[in-house]
Amino acid sequence: MTAQKGKDLLLKLDSDGAGTFITVAGLRSRSLAFNARSVDITHSESAGRWRELLEGAGVRSASVTGRGIFRDASSDASLRQIFFDGLIRDWQIVIPDFGMVSGAFQITSLEFAGEHDGEMSFDLALESAGALSFAAA
Image (cartoon, rainbow, N blue to C red):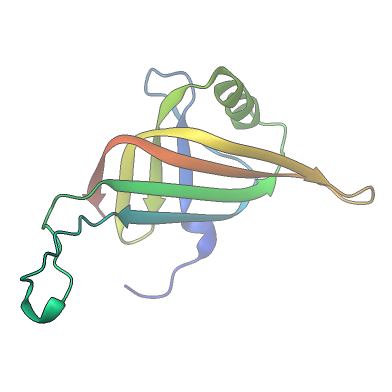
């Protein structure tokens, strides 16, 4: 994969729960992290007392974070409402020249900040809430 523009990493929200995806506006930075917890099955007879892990048995999850500015867009209102209602929605994370990750996520953090001589900004954190799918580009 060649060098890519960070602005092309897109975060899209199913704003109405009916499959209408909108790009979250105003994001200046965003990231996606995949996690897999391991299951330790080491015992007293493990070879050389090295740790042993159980293949395919851990819990997998994904976390998404973003930081941006409000643009008075429909995505701003959707984010706030979904957070305050505690809803789980489908999201799409578009990774340029790599593919798209899709699935259910819950907004676990929504923070607001602002300086008296600057713009209002927000920080967003999502946690996966089910199986995710990947479609290659």
